[in-house]
Image: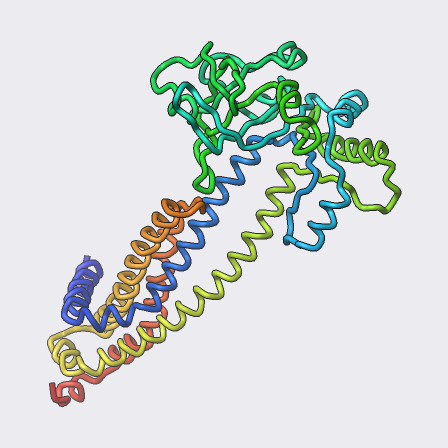
Length: 413
């Protein structure tokens, strides 16, 4: 109980000291504020990107992968990209059929192609809508859930039927509260009948994932041709044979394209583990840079706190002498200055948390970066700032506790 009372008294004295010199306290805290803001901002960016990667991986599934013309999972190399653009041929429907006929380790295999179009209903027109032409199994391969209606069938795909499944944004903006099933929309002037409405997927990088319309790939090819923009989606028969399935597809494509041993692939294969690995490499680099910057700010802020606390000890020498003469122990004096330095740093951490939250909110609302402040970042920021205050407050607190009460009382106030 005595220790609790002593701590409470030290906290009250420290709070009174901080209130009496607000400007000095704020200037002292700049290093801690900048460190905490930087730390939480970086953690918020990584957390927001983690959500994006998780969504991307969940769409692909732990047993799924994609085959595309070009993909970069490491550092982007413009020269290599241009070389790949010239070297890598477009994926094609014939190649898709060849892989579908010869692959043995897949439970599902699909094809899609896409572009940006305008969609209209009566006098209402929506622009920048993602049109996706896909096989009938694309909903399962892309993890598209339906809120109403159905997805188009293989028969509709083979017959190039003008049917469509629309995203939640199109349903809301074109039909409001009405039921779009059975109604006709126009995709760049061509009529399509709505047969299904997808569940809302939300946004990534500030861009909605619900502004889309899916149509049978046969109908898509009939309108736009099949020469560009095709990609394949595959699902291994079992997660345990994912790597073997990827190797099988790689071998089949290379054999069909007559690629020589040792020659680079003229296509790219993406899987959830590859995306996660690439993201981990990127976040490790970001985190390492953030740790370096935060460490510098924290050390600078800690040194400033130590200097200020030493000045405070000099200012309160007479006060310390009075407290010791009326029975205050060394531990009481030590606690007072340790609590004051930790409260000072903790206040800096709190201000840093508020600033980081403001920055994260502004970035999320006005840019495409999906920042989100995790609760763990707030706890780490506050705990780290308080720890810095305690560490750099030890020396001034010890100097104060060692003062001789008689010598201290002789100091002029």
